[in-house]
Each structure stands twice: as C-alpha cells, then as structure tokens.
Picture 1 (cartoon, rainbow, N blue to C red):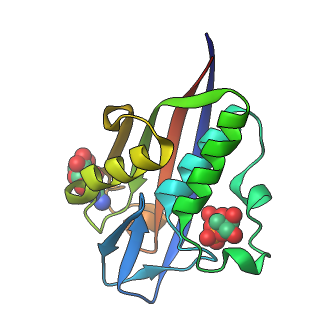
Picture 2 (cartoon, rainbow, N blue to C red; picture 1 turned 180 degrees about the horizontal axis):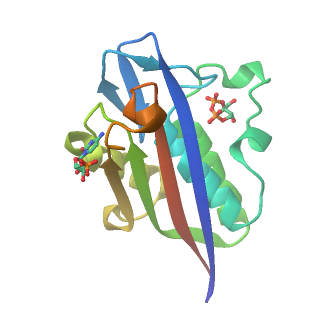
Length: 159
Ligand SMILES: Nc1ccn([C@@H]2O[C@H](COP(=O)(O)O)[C@@H](O)[C@H]2O)c(=O)n1
Ligand SMILES: C[C@@]1(CO)OP(=O)(O)OP(=O)(O)OC[C@H]1O
C-alpha cells in the first residue's frame, strides 16, 4: 500500500460581511473575509494538504487569483477538483485533520456539518474527517480578531 502525507495552511483577513465560509458551511458572523474566492480557509488548507501530498504544487497554481473564473468561487469546487487530481493518480484521502484558529466565530457548533460536507465532497466516511478549532489566546493577528487561519494534514492512500 502506498501512503503519502501532506500539510496545508491558509489565512484570510476579516473584512466587511455577515458570514464566513468554513469547511463548505456558511457560518454567520459580524465580519466576512477578504478573498478572491469565497475565502474558505478550511478548504484552502485542505486542498493544499492534498496537493502537497503528491507534490502537485499549491492552490494558487491550480486556481490563480489572477483568473476571473475564480472570483467568488465556491471552494467546494476546488476541493472536488483536488480530489479528482489525486484520484487520477490512484490515491484517495485516507483521513484528514483540520484546525481552525480564530477567537470567533465559534467553530465547534458547526464542526459536524463541516465534516459531513468535506466527507461528501471527498467521497469518504465522515469519521475520516476531523475538524477542530482553537483560539490563539488573544495573541497575534488571530488573537486580535484581524483574521482567521487554518492548518490541515491529510494522508493519501494509494492502491
Ligand atoms: N473559534 C473557536 C475556538 C475554540 N473553540 C473551542 O473552544 C475550545 C477552547 O479553545 P482554547 O483556544 O481556549 O483552547 C477549543 O478546544 C474548541 O473546542 C471553538 O469552537 N471555536
Ligand atoms: C483560492 C484562490 C483562488 O483564486 O484565491 P483566494 O480566495 O484569495 O484564496 P487563497 O487562500 O489566497 O488562495 C489563492 C487562490 O488559489
């Protein structure tokens, strides 16, 4: 059995808006995020982890921010495309684990919906998808409420 590991990280600054997209789920919030796409840090970090596992570059290589096609794009389309890329090479996500870093919004109440959305897009079991969150104890840009970050790791399993 072939296995590969990848990790990803993404940040978006908060801006005007009334919600953030996290793991494919719309979460009501008094701020939005500044991004070319829908700015879903969970899915962007996860895409980078999947791409990184097979050394396929990063999300900006596959979906350049200079490309108008991705303006306001639903990041679930990025995730499904990354899943197709790894499937074409004989791999599937064995499991993945994401950590969201922000003071607010609270992620916990939405974590199960995020897991279900990600699992559906990847065609894997919900128990293979973990979504967690932490504050940064009021420290740094996340602690000051200036932005939101996510890290992801994933294991790819090949035939
Ligand atoms: N945006 C967040 C941040 C944290 N949580 C949950 O709260 C727990 C405690 O966070 P600390 O940073 O104080 O350790 C954390 O383990 C999460 O369960 C959250 O849901 N959303
Ligand atoms: C997702 C892309 C799409 O153009 O733009 P953004 O939504 O700004 O997000 P980022 O995490 O900076 O990744 C780069 C781009 O691929």
